[in-house]
Image (tube, rainbow, N blue to C red; front, side, top):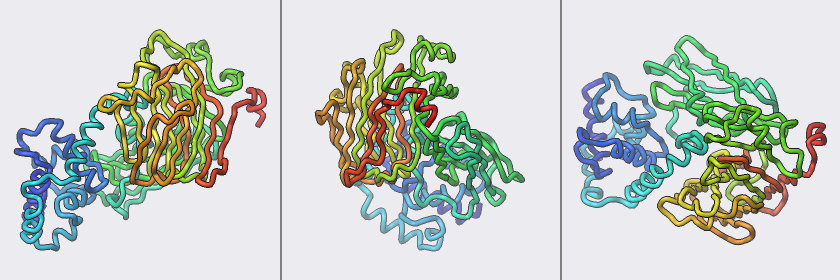
Length: 436
């Protein structure tokens, strides 16, 4: 690292800390670094890990961080990428920025702090329900990747599971100590790769629209979408979250809805006295714009002694964003969480009790979205409305997640013209579905 680079990085760090209203970095707490991470992401759409920020602010580096990290820091401080900032007059930039940001907190900063509080409260919910991190969003990082990095994939099967996927990459020109490949949001599927290698294979056991990640040390340097399609509904459970248990169709309930008997869950090794997740997936390109759609489905759950607050989670995954809607049993409104695009709502900090019902009876959920304005209806009554800004993209996955024995029926998805693009009343018995 040259002296000029070192000086520029130090000035960037000072500017970011000042704009974020953070004092002496030597006394920052974990929450301060959490806030700093979200503060940077709010301004640049690039998420830097807590460990990366700690290393940079503690001056624990002998070389410059990766260019994607430098770009994120430079844009946060001076609205320029690292290369352009180096070529600019730093004193001029400092004067120009400080005149407008010396004693006021911008609307963006206030918004970022609100996002931090909401997301920190929501973390336990998402970890329990899907075992994920913020990565569950599968949101693409815009403009922060290194364009010359080779990272691509090839599926070995079409519409079948399990499916081995071949990843090709070139990490020879990246300066880092260690490299990793992660197939999705699931951190248990993160594997180390090494210079001198060009390929890594991995198995996808469930369908979905995933984002595979290439790491240099603990920084994501490139992401690619991996759309693992299946030919029909797919059922799986997790216990613990790192262990996937799948169910062939002959194990499903032979009734006019999609479900599974508790006896079958136990036969497959699920301990009903411990926390588990039951999931249903239908994955394909539905040819529906996520910002203009109509979605309707029916659901209910069976009671378990070990589940105090049964929750049904409805997930519509787009190419750039997603819907995550939680419906809880009566009395469990504090545990409800929902996200539409870039907007989230947390039952810990907001009254979401309208998103609760007698979950042990059949219920009907509707999502009506027009130009990013969302209405949620429960059993024909509007119970919540919201809006978002960032586009969700085309819908590529419909999935359901229950923290107990849940069942679904009558799934319908329409486009903005009211045309039915997907419908399944699940009336076929198992024998007919197996022959399809």
